[in-house]
Image (cartoon, rainbow, N blue to C red; front, side, top):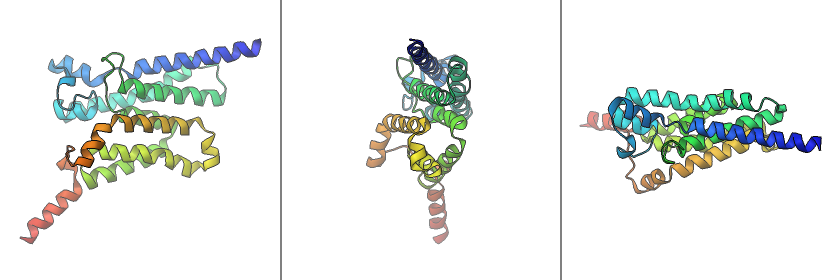
Length: 233
C-alpha cells in the first residue's frame, strides 16, 4: 500500500511538472512583444510563426535577439527551476526523468502554446535552453552543426534540422549505445528531435522545392562564390 502511494505520488509530481513546464514554455514571447511594442499580431505577418526567426524578419534583429534569449530561458527555467521545485521527492534517476519531461513539455508548449491558440514557434531555442542544462556538450556539437549548415547554405531552417538530428546521435557516440539507451536524456532528445522535424515540415517542403527563404547575409559560400565571380570578370 505504501509503495503504491509512493508510485502514485511520483506520477502526480511528474504530471504537475509536465503541466507547469508546458504552461511556461507556452509563453508566446514574439506575440507579446509584437502586441506590446508594435501593436501587431505577429501571427499575421511573415511566416506566421511565433518564434525568433519570424520576429527577426518582422520586428528587426534586435527584437529577434530578445525573443531568442527569452525563448532559450524558458527551456532553462523549465529544467533548472520547475522540475526540481515540484519533483523534489524524486530519486536521482527520477529527477532526470522529471527534468527531461519538463524540457520536452516546455518545447511542446513553445510549439503549441495554450496562450496563443495552440500556435507557436519551431521549438529550437527552447530546446537549446533545455540542452544547456541537461546536455551542454551535445548542445555545443549541435551549435557547431547548425553554424556549418547555416553558413554553407544560408538556410536557418536547414541549420536547425541538422542540429536537431545531430544532437541525439552525438549523445549516443559520447555515452555508448548501451548506456545511452537506458538514459531518459536520449529519449527526451529523440522526442525533441521529432517535434522540431514536425514543426519544420513546411520548411522541408520548401527546401526540396528550392523556394525556402535564404538569409543571404550569412550565406558564406554564396558570398565567396559571388566574390570569385566578380574577381574573374
